[in-house]
Length: 331
Figure: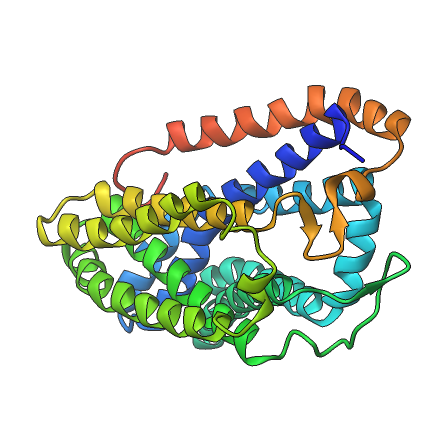
């Protein structure tokens, strides 16, 4: 059975929202991850200032993903929550705790160190469980009768744990690129020095993950072998990582961040080529998971025509208004 146009539309909306979320919330999570490596109080404040106007709006895209899945693909939503109940709880805990820490550290002196570590650990936790969930999805989720048929701890396998570490490093690389773009002086120089080590560590984790997939369902059941044209995306992604190092060595402010974004987009497109039309590899497709046509139509006119443009316009406006260097914060 082929998916309807409305089902394809909402699958596309969710795919774009995931990509936007990974890039936008990825860099501010990355700044939070690097936050734990910075010892100077003034530099920590500058790191927070660089993401202050953006971080809460970035997470709007995560809400959009969850709401769209619930309304347009309820079967996928149910399976996903069943498979990742614990990771979702950890994700929410990390995001909430880092948000509280972001605000409280500004008004606390005695507990500022506690809130600083809370901001860092919340960022690491959120990034790790997102990567682990992606790895578990790649392994395949057991489904029977439209319900999750596995264990709540299936995601604690070596491959998902490795992809979790990989996303932490990837977000940290994105955060370092953001700091190079938005700051100057000693903080920018330190972020620039961190980029080569982060890129090298990310390549090592990718190589280890690829080695685990050689005898694993993540590649055996994927469609990359039949869709050879899709190999262009991982190759372009590796080239983008090399370009990150090249532009960092040339002391370019913008391009390391842009090339890291390109790496993430290539990684996302690689997964799309491997698993389309599955929404839950390797059991639930877009067509089989879609809500009834009337529900999709109502959702299109209510959310697709009204809510989506508002979120997109707000996001663009915020990044345009707060463009440029955050030398003394945003006042």
